Length: 157
Image (tube, rainbow, N blue to C red):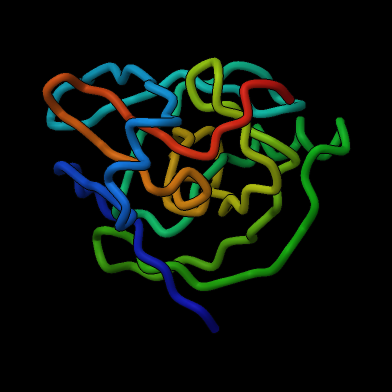
């Protein structure tokens, strides 16, 4: 079984090696601070609508909740991929299902297709993790000003 960790690690992060290419074709997405060094972006999950997503560069997977999954399944916008055992920030293990989402939009101009997301119980918050962010690499996470600089974005669905 594969393991992943969901931890909140928010620092300046730059993933990628060619910094010169970042400035040529990046999409800026403003983040909102919700205190305690947590940042959120507005996004859209195709088939579920507008959502606020907590940005978590320490999370291997983006996450959605069961409520969102139910909506996505009804709309044919999520397909089951696998189960895995996750290790949460508090050290506890949890078995979760991973679904591939048809598309998500980060901000308003960064559509990503076929994003894997772990499904958490109930109506927990949605997390924008590395399964989505890695599709935008090289990317930069900045706390001052709070924004993401994303590469490889499609501005249309």
